[in-house]
Amino acid sequence: MIAAAVSFLSGVLFGLGLAISQMTNPAKVLAFLDILGDWDPSLAFVMAGAVGVAAIGFAQAKKRATPVLEDEFKIPKRRDLDMPLVLGAALFGAGWGLVGLCPGPAIAGLVAGQTETVIFVGAMLAGMLTNRLIGSMRR
Amino acid sequence: MIGGGLIGLSATVLILVKGRIAGISGILGGALTLPTGDWAWRVLFLIGLIAGAALYNFVAPAPFVVAFDADTPLLVIAGLLVGYGSSLGNGCTSGHGVCGIARLSPRSIAATVLFMAVAMATLFLLRHTGAA
Image 1 (cartoon, rainbow over the protein chains, first blue to last red):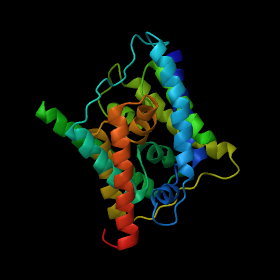
Image 2: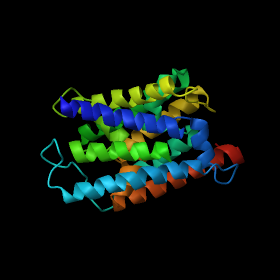
Image 3: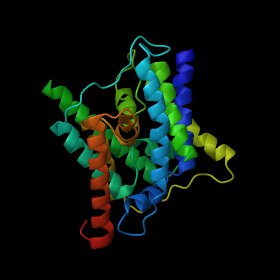
């Protein structure tokens, strides 16, 4: 029950943070990415704030043997670069730069009830399922 | 800055209490399967994500703005790229960009530098050359 409340609450903090910082607005994100146009650097401060606070959390996590409510930390251990990482990041970046939405703001933005968001989220889920399907066929 | 701090706080709570990375594409991807033991917390987090945005609209003087500059084909192409790419590369802005950089993961730092550069280049081609 506490674990369920914590999962929900961390989602609430995330959604609230996205809305306050205007990450939910594709126009704002594109203005941030448009470094050679009319550049709006303000989202860099959002990123810095998020990374700064999260760094404290991960530093604390490193000192603990286990999380408070679970048996183990599920943190990726790999450090090497491989083709799926590079290709995936490049394709993701292209999509992000075309419209200005990434997964978190896309889901949170559903609250605004716009058709564009629904179309984007539908295509995004199809893209995720496609990769998982290809992955499971190769196994 | 406050908004970013809340995102960082969300990541902190999730890692310290649940031992999980606050990466939206990973949480969402794992929720797209049949319900298993690993399913419920993901769905709860995603419901919370939507509730948090709704809470903002309830409390703030004006609802948050969602302004698009894209037609339907562009939305579909971009959505497919974002979904497929984040799934293949095991992360997006939150998992690689926030949590990965916060824990100094070489993979996440490389992924973040790359997706930022490609996003900026793509937008440049779209906006300033008429090529795309």
